[in-house]
Length: 279
Length: 279
Image 1 (cartoon, chains in turn purple, green):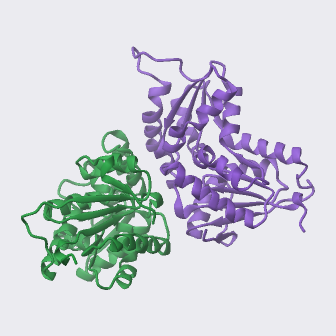
Image 2: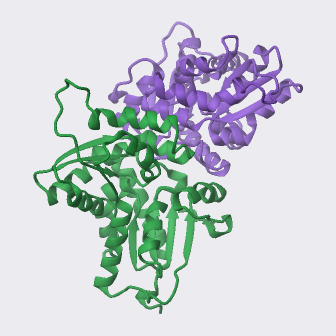
Image 3: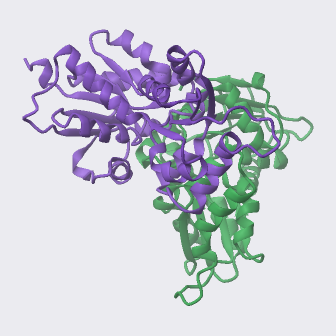
């Protein structure tokens, strides 16, 4: 029987966005093997109901658990926001880490004026999971949630700079960060959480709209840190002397996964490295 | 047993986009009952593989056929492009009408210079169904296909006018319709097919980019005409003296369907008119 510390980490997302989390984990824990599942046949999760997303999340987890994993990372904000409880109930023996709580923690650490803005998909924002996670750490914080679904489409299309993403960012974020003079405006947030794994690709366009002193929190790095802490705490970290491998699984077109995934991971994914699975 | 002409027409789409086709059918055949199924839990179809889309299409059809229908309209370009054969094999007794062939016919009728541009989702364009349908009518036609996936996100978000859609339309369409002086450019198309049911909502922004004399073909009206012809030919039209009802089915959030659907249909859909189904 394989020793627990030799087992891979399982990670899933609705598509390729979670590869920004994989990239951060790879940097923090390079010796760990990872199986990454992108449920591209059913993306996006962000416009679907909580019940549907929970059902999909449990199915993704089942595929990974069936392959033998020591820890599960939900590298999808929408699923982290609505499905963690269902996943922990379904797999009580496997630690489950989402991206919401680490992102919320990083935001509370960064803010000075206790005004935090969160941007994400419609369902992440409407579900209020970030808002709750932040308030459980900083009860005084004023949290503004703002859905930005077009950022997902822009990142997928690879339109991450130029006129279009800047116009989209301005239309979404100006009301929060640059209220028109004379309008009654509450404290402008000094911290912005990118509450969707697609959004780090749009960070330059977003930076153009928010003030220079605004901290932009990308939960990928904080989530990788949390995974490392949890592995250490449980004594199931893999020896540092090895270099981990990555296996990619997708529920739809392998070629498209490799192509768009490369953009999110920042290094090339070969079509031969991706397996099609039916879940 | 219900007489065939009294049965409803079944219509499905991956979401609410097909409601632009329903709107046209409602205008052409107001006495017909229609059951409209929006498979919102699994949208979008446009980025998924042909195999996955065919499987989804047959499942949608099964749900409608099970309720008793006299004709099936595939009000989704992606599914029309890849799944018509599978649907006709699965249901040989029910006439199946897609949106591609009517759109291609209208384009061939409109063009004078035999240069036609098609815009649609990635899979509609890559699949080449419009290109084949046009060439089977006009073998001399020069057809340019151009995927415009962001138009879908813009229509869903309701950003159909102003700076953002105009910038997106220019980025997609300028290379085809306004080639830079000095670049070697073939004949500019005089006809543009909106090969996605979402795109009629963006028609004003698209019109700003193409020349005033360009014909914009929206396949909804032509598809409605084709449905009317088929019902007449088979003698299964409903009597003109009645006014048909519409039943809406969705595979995900009813509230969201009613809200975004209203934008596409052009008249209000009440939440109470929409039923959730699990297919």
